[in-house]
Length: 268
Image 1 (spheres, rainbow, N blue to C red):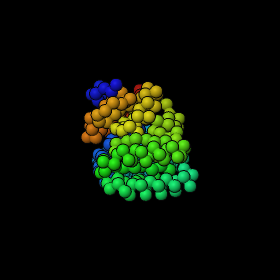
Image 2 (tube, rainbow, N blue to C red):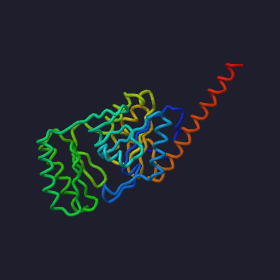
Image 3 (tube, rainbow, N blue to C red):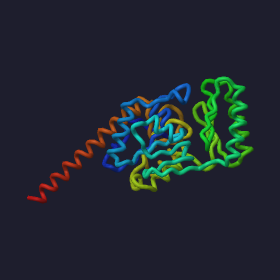
Image 4 (cartoon, helix red, strand yellow):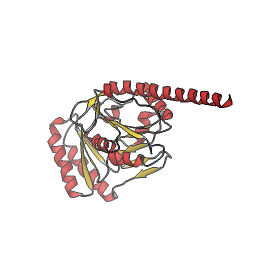
């Protein structure tokens, strides 16, 4: 059961770790994945939140990390790409789960050949996963799903991940919840309260993971969800980001002043 955004608890005190989905959360959905962008002001706000939270901010997306860096620049945050199949920790070390080369090649060939027959569909090859987009070819949704299911049956190491006008094939056991749990075991995330904001079916595993850690799970948009809170749309996410930045900045200022008074008191 999700609740309205106006009852969110105050985000501050240096207690929180922030995790953000990208498409549909930090960036508006577009007809094609390569048309998506994060507004400049939002990117700078994210950079400020990352700095104020001492680096406890990560992007959690179905996109490869290379694309996340391009979309979020100048921010270069810890990130989980391809739903966690690749992950860059706070030290910059990259961790990857890969498909056997022969499996990846067979998938690429079969999917490319089949989808060439369905105008408006698009295959996005990510190396360790494949996204079958049909936003501009909705009439082929059934065929796309059947194709994806047949690949999972043929390659048991794969899992099927439905999304908004897309279905993805990824290594089994990989999801956003697992990525968040791993981050929460590492500095600077460990010991904090996780906050995860997402909009899609692919984010539900993240919501469940954050709920289990007594964190804040936030669904963007309509539809049933395991998230405990809700924001209506991307513009509301932008507004909330600004509010979080102001709160964190205020906490920092208060902390500095408090330390100054303590120091003065000690000298007296």
